Length: 351
Image (spheres, rainbow, N blue to C red):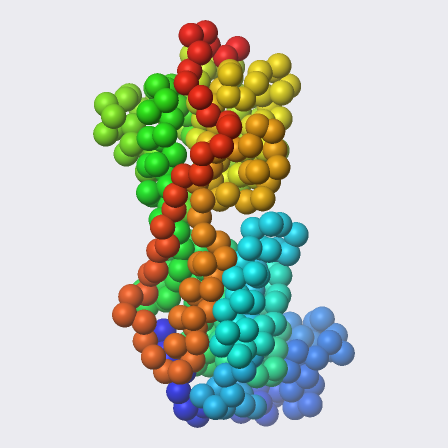
């Protein structure tokens, strides 16, 4: 990562060179660079490809070292309580730091393998001094673009392992998987399943690893058929739970790696006429408001979403001031919140 410093950039192709390469006028190329909408899609494509091919560096209109008053927050979506918790944490920390925040949703996708350059150029045009990415999956080109423009950024709960040097904030997911499973073991369960998120996502693999570690420490046999992935999707989690119930020896408890997926598990059990926790104990992960609303209230692992977001904002402010965090990875602790969805196993199998 390149620290924020002088706004000067290394010499590169001029806008006139880009315009000539794309076969357009300089004013048209300028419109594309500045994120203007009044450009035909085919023209925008040609200019964008020329920008990338030639390595054009957009010259900022501001000095990030002198005007750190605006930061961007890019979230996966805006319609979940997860996003609400992240927004709350960022807003509170930004208020304390005297910053304003621009919020965007789902704007880090790629088209045809190329980054959505228009949003990145708008970032420069509006004078943002830094970016927070939540649950974002950036491409190598997007990482390179941010570093090339000397824009500091911090990842909140990154989807994949970030490149070396990228600063990120997350939760102690492995420990969360351990304490969720240990809680069920302490209640007397041994047939414990796990419904995980995506197989390749950092948080999901860490939670499953914690689950397996807790089983191994207790001397309980790991059953591969008890490990299911539902991609953090409530409907898929419902189907995975039904599959688990159809096993010759179904589980007596399940660790569900998100509260939203736990809602799907509750639905599957209701379809089979089973109850929580009499027929099956359920532990979730996140401690979203939904965990308290459902009946029975969900025992879950709390990850401090608002605190993670606030920590990321404070790290970003330090980077905007030219400081380099001592560690690129910050993990906040997770803890078990016991409610009413867990109990000891019954003698009979839940069928």
